[in-house]
Image 1 (tube, rainbow, N blue to C red):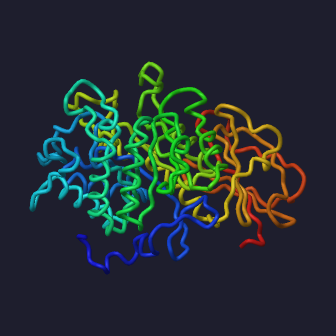
Image 2 (image 1 turned 90 degrees about the vertical axis):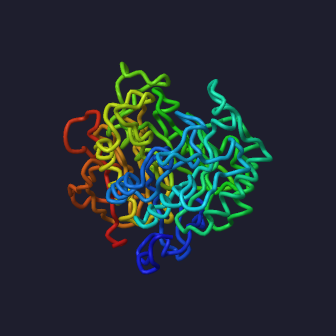
Image 3 (image 1 turned 135 degrees about the horizontal axis):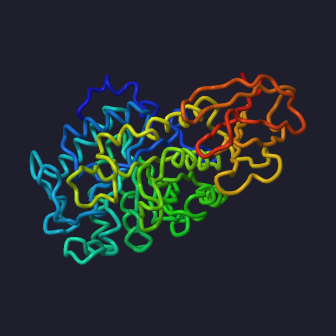
Length: 448
């Protein structure tokens, strides 16, 4: 590690390694401190950036309140195994997964070490994908993008990478990589990671409009289910609370989250058509609050330019509008921390989704309401600011204190005390409209 022990006293892992909560739905540290996953998507971190740019990016994300960075060691989304990183180095010798290209001093993996250690110095976990799905299925015609990993060599590679990084305190393993094929390969990788590293949690990143639970929920190595609600239009993608509803109800119980919802600044639709418009900050907020209120243990944000680390001269750009240094400060990137702050402002452990708080039907499409409650509090999210009825009495006390919380600014607007019985209608500030989202927060005075 680059930093001294004294500089590590206030980082999250000073509370001990991450564990699954006793109820199976959340994350916590060994000493009992709750952990709310707030991730940023940086798939190309190890390939695209210089060391100076790594410092810039990670400091920016730490400053905005993110605590997890999702990045892939051997990426294969826009390029193949013969494309070097910014320092001119390749991850493997002759594309052989059993031969990581490790040379003394300054090689590809030395750069990965540097990035992980720099994340640690910024108090950030790295949700590390060992390899992208490209090399399990084979994408494209180029030789360096063909199937390179099989159940035997991926086990060797998985053991090697787990042994290299198992002593880093800021690692969360993420098996998979946008891929629905390769069950044997991914299970071999998961088993290798678990065998070589029993200290760190393991999740699985699935293909778009899917959840890891469909194929891998029963696997012993899987600690956290991930869905990729993705970037398409329509209910199967945009209404991501359905994925969380499914995973939350499964047994054995495991934490779940949306690890890849729509990216801010990405064209809408499966074919990424700019004519359909772009996903904007109201969209990333909506999916974040829907997922978390449905029971997710956290959420991952993404920006189209940032996950690619796109520059204006790049041929592969997914119709990115701006380059990544400017995109780091997109509106949604500032707003995600308000969700983390809200959830950590009340007891996180024991929180449950509870749609019975809503009087009548919760609504469909953008008008859909989501409710959650915990020890002494209840919350209801509206994406459009429409009025709604609440079944009072779901938390203790004859009276409750009510307020509106803004997902856009993190500011509170007091409503006052309300009788905690019967049905009460609440009307959010402003006119009902796309992007006028609010959280109704009800607190029992008895809970302090």
